[in-house]
Image (cartoon, rainbow, N blue to C red; front, side):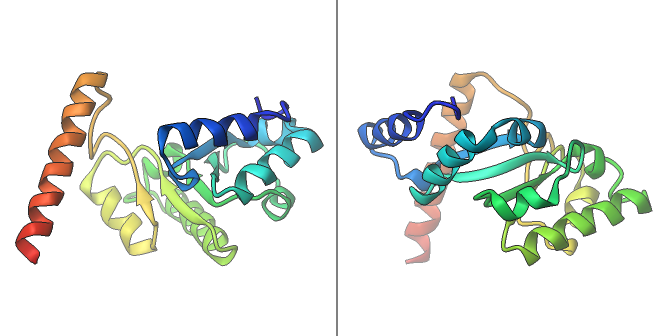
Length: 167
């Protein structure tokens, strides 16, 4: 799809029809997929980024890790692979790699997401290190669409309740 010059227009039209802002979309690409895009893919990524779509490198540090791509591509986010998150609370090597990724990302003005967070200890270390966002089984396991819809409704209702009580 990223090699298709019409993809950016199609996505923007689809978002407009749904009444969603471009900033609500994050396109996640692995390092390998980024390397395979070529110049036409880079053009589409730049158009998407200029419209407000966020581009995220998934599983950062497990593939090509071409630092030159971090300069050239309109990336907004790096995702720390779960293989580094697994031992972050107990393994010095995992923690050191996570620190390096977080430092690199934040120095470049990129946000960070830790994948595969399963324990409170992992989350505590990631918070201490300044990771922006975390995802994983610690928060929720994968669920069917209907259960997810109900979860979103309950969170939305709770937010409304909190907002109403704070006023």
